[in-house]
Image (cartoon, rainbow, N blue to C red; front, side, top):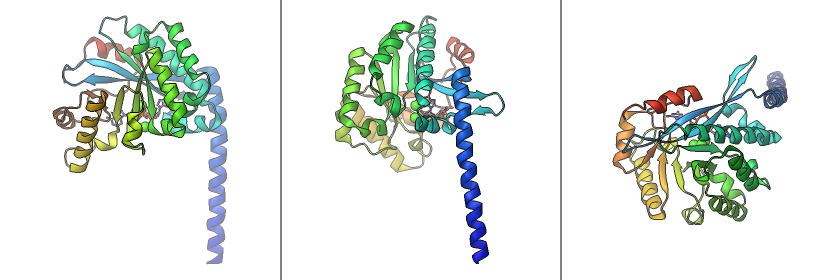
Length: 279
Ligand code: C2E
Ligand code: CA
Ligand code: CA
Ligand code: CA
């Protein structure tokens, strides 16, 4: 038993060492990615249910590593937050997204909001508002066409500061959506104090919504509350016609998910906008 214990321990140490060195090499690779711009933005359409119109797109980062190939954001955003590399990455995302949004809105398909994910470190950095103001000025994008997606956690970390920053964004005319809603722990009384525009209901409530009465009840509650507070509701992760139909009946207005479209490169998005599918 003793020998086995030692082996287990040794195995564990090797495993740990491997993880640490993987993180170090990922960090170095990320540094190269920043310098060589190995990133690309994909865009996922956001739909208005009743009209079937594309009202916006969410920018989602993709990393094309020259040897390792495609690395999904879930595998490097967390690390980039730990190392601070998220700052240059976020700057690139924002500038690129605003530039694309300006182009898309010149195509005559109607107003299209650009939703950009904002990491906690980026949002809490002094000078964040200035940076937003600057990127809008450089791109020429109208402020109301930029929507920043923030998670509950970001806003709860330092509530007073967060509320101030949100008020600053509101003064600029930039929109804010609360991302992954329902997965954090923000209380409704806290939510009431947040100057935001939209709630994005997390996809974990959508998966079983047709069979799980609790999920349906939660969605009903959020829709009712949001309506009273003058907030829009967008449901994420809608994958089937059945889910869409069910949620539309429950008076959700805006939708995003594989059922409508997957995240796609800019060239595909242009084609999608030119002839969106009937939903
Ligand atoms: P998120 O902000 O919640 O983005 C939605 C994720 O759900 C995306 O994954 C999207 O591809 C996926 N998704 C969309 N529709 C469906 C669906 O119908 N079913 C399922 N199963 N999934 C769906 P992705 O692109 O891998 O991004 C993962 C996370 O990485 C994002 O979650 C976001 O937190 C983060 N992220 C992505 N891009 C950026 C970025 O530019 N900056 C920052 N800070 N974070 C980013
Ligand atoms: Ca998001
Ligand atoms: Ca989300
Ligand atoms: Ca998420």
